Length: 196
Image 1 (tube, rainbow, N blue to C red):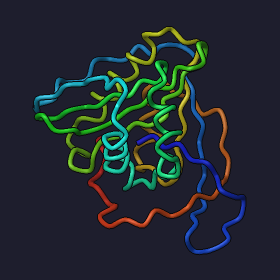
Image 2 (image 1 turned 90 degrees about the vertical axis):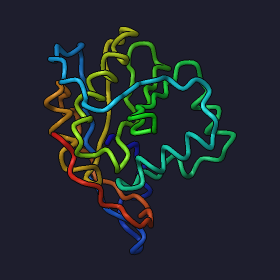
Image 3 (image 1 turned 60 degrees about the horizontal axis):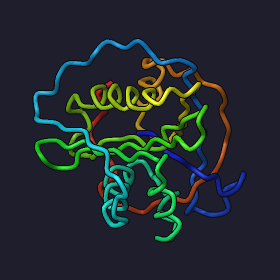
Image 4 (image 1 turned 120 degrees about the vertical axis):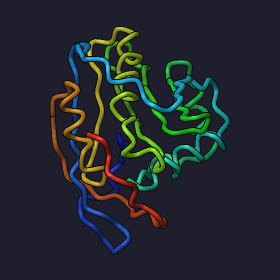
């Protein structure tokens, strides 16, 4: 759900670029959220320490391709490894019935402000009632290190229910900006509706 975009320019230069509105959100305190219902499927949430690059890229593509996640695709293996192997970058995988069903990445390199850089479900599990469960647990993990603020950003390429869901979970909009991103060519980019 959450996307990290690097706008390429302020004006599209060709049909391979997409104009987007990026929305920046933040929480200034840990939200008091009701626990979501326990999923009917077997689930496990695990932190992957020093994830293999191929595994990270696989999940990034699986979860992010429908929403045009592209920023990490542009990174070479060495730069990506340095980032995701940083001890203050937390990479979590939601397993559903033993298979990877979602990913989340928390950047806690700044002690006072943490960022939920990426969050989403694989297309097979969008609309299956796992979104609230996963997000509640990820927010608990993000706030467990006691930052002063938790930030994230989303854009108009994200699932239509993403922004309202973040707001229901206590995130407030702090800014909106226009940008342009490269279009990710990919088949099967339309997963089912997100459970909001």
